[in-house]
Length: 145
Ligand code: TYD
Image (cartoon, rainbow, N blue to C red; front, side, top):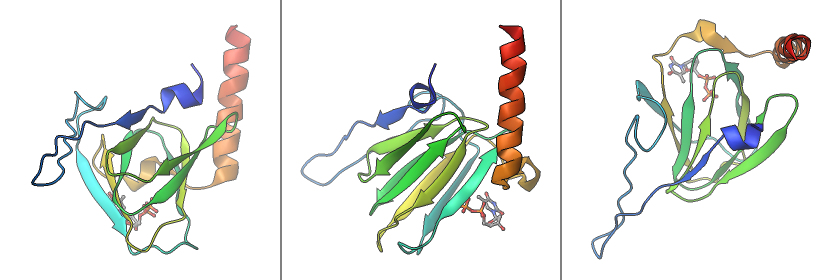
């Protein structure tokens, strides 16, 4: 499976009516993990790059519930960008995938659903280290083939 195929972009149902919009995201149902943690990022301007890490243990779903941002996703073999520009769009980020969030609009509120409680030790924040880990993994899987 390609990285792009693994990082599902969800288009959540809009259950809105004449009173306004309603979007539901259910852990283990709409998205592929039970939600243990929720955080949101706002007040980042268009010059800021956030994220810049991969996680050994955590899976995430990113949703811009207000405003817009972009997320660049890579595993060092593939790279692509997802525009988070609607409140019903979410992108799934599996374990060991590098992400950079950027291009925040002034009104951006980026909601992040996570499969784990916070543990700073499972973050890889050095891209060179990440690249080395991924290339070691790749050579291991080449040997198996
Ligand atoms: P950081 O991981 O740099 O944020 P982002 O990935 O969104 O750019 O986190 C910023 C700070 O907040 C850092 O000191 C760690 C802390 N933090 C927690 O304590 N718990 C959390 O769940 C998260 C995401 C961050």
